[in-house]
Length: 152
Image (cartoon, rainbow, N blue to C red; front, side, top):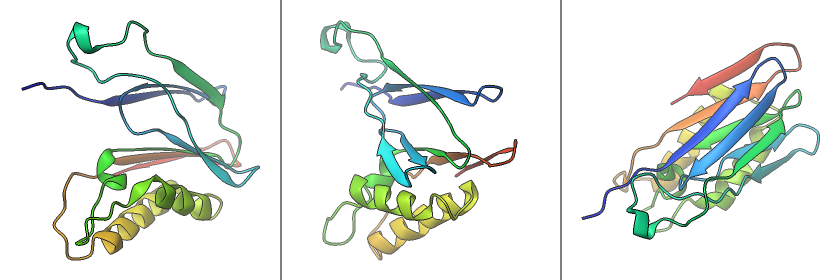
């Protein structure tokens, strides 16, 4: 039996508002842009931690760097969000999450965004038993100097 873990690391510099992200086989982080009112999934190649050397690619991890502008939101989550299944076996999927984050981006604070994702995932699965844990963290750069965060 093979064991591994996935991980997404984001390092935020609160002085410059830059964030560097690296991904080790985890779900793609999302950034909502206040200016474009769009949510983008950041695709970063990376392999899970703990894989045997023979299974790992030779290349290392890549990093993505961006500046969070006032009103932008960074959203990280576990696969339990997008892989949540309803009784018919349908997944919640990335597209639904992107639409939700785009609708919520300008209107909601990080806690409200996470609460809305939980509500929507629970609505999607209905009476089906949970298939995985759900973990999320959201960072939103305010139009004032304060950064708001929330986790679940």
